[in-house]
Image (cartoon, rainbow, N blue to C red; front, side, top):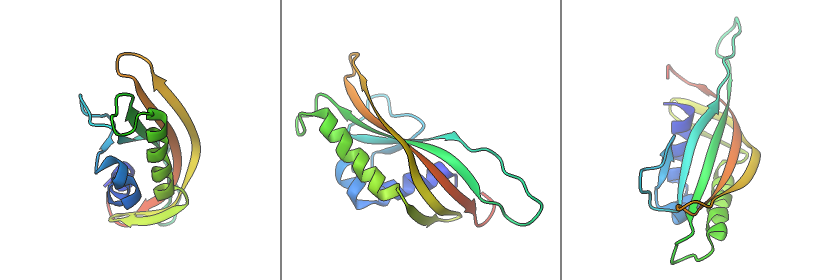
Length: 141
């Protein structure tokens, strides 16, 4: 299991996130015609760490995007929807520690947050959040 698997699993299992996206948590890319709102998780960077004793902790930067579509009938303001999803994601991740065997997350902290609007024919709002995550694998990943 990778760190993005562990983050995706945590978001799928979180009630606050599920209320908004109903399990639509994807990795690396959205489906071709996604149902929105949805969440996208992907690894930005994971530098290698080396030492001479035992297991080391790994620190990764993981990006989590919260998407909403402008043509949502239930929520006419896509910014409100995207921010609701982003806030739910942040509540589930920021400051959290959890285990998703074999990955043990020691700390997850939001590094950055920004809003993007795709003004093309897609008309999608998304909130980008970067999380610095410190973890280690309890067994071979």
